[in-house]
Length: 70
Image (tube, rainbow, N blue to C red; front, top):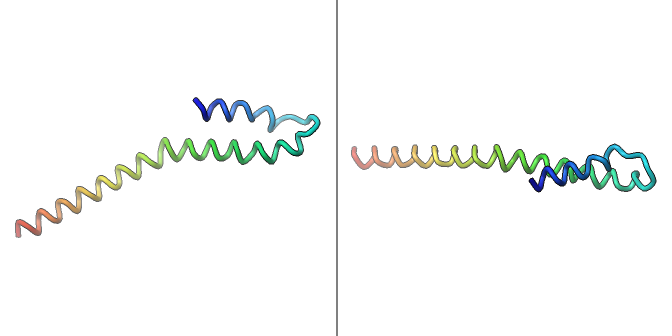
């Protein structure tokens, strides 16, 4: 909700041509980009990294159990 509110509030700034917009556009563009990329990171990258870490942990645990059994 926060990301949607920020992005939707900055979109009019990006497409405006009024007075002062030459100063506001360089501020709004990185803000929108940062919000979009941080959302993608939180929603996709972080869960994938946790799954990969859990798979590695289980593989190491199985390898250690095989060494103990042998």
